[in-house]
Length: 182
Image: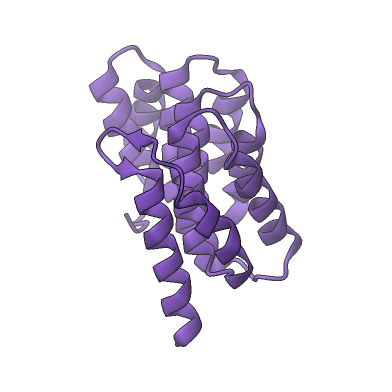
C-alpha cells in the first residue's frame, strides 16, 4: 500500500470516526484508508494514546505500519515492547517495522532499538508476536540476526492463516542471505 494523495477532509474525518466505531468492517476499511495518508499520523498517534479497545489499537497500528512515514517507527517499537499490549497489536507492530526497515540506516539508534525489541519478542508466549518478529528480523537484512533466526527454526508453533514460526524463520534466513549476496 503506497501512499497516495492525502484524503479529502471529509474522507479523513469519516475514516477517523470509523476507526473509533464499533463496526469491525468499517474499522478495517478506515485503517486501510488512513494508511494511505501520512497527514493522519498525528491524529492516529493521539487516538492511540486514548484508545483502550484491542481491535481499535490494532487498526491504528495497521494504519501506521503502512504509512510512508518513519515518524511511526518509535511508536511501533514501543507497542512491540509493551508486554501489556495484546499479542494482536504487538504482532502488527512487528510487522509494521518489517515494512519500514528498508528505509532505516542499519547503524542508527532507531534501527538498533527495533532489533533489540524484536529479539526480545522472540521469547514472547504468543506465536503471533514471535512469527511477526521473525518476519521483521528477516526484513531487517541484518546478517548478525542469522544465528538468532536459526534458533527460531525449532519453534513449531503455528499462526493460523500464516504458518509455523519455524517456516518463517527459514524464509527470513533466505531473505537475509539473498540481500547479503547482492
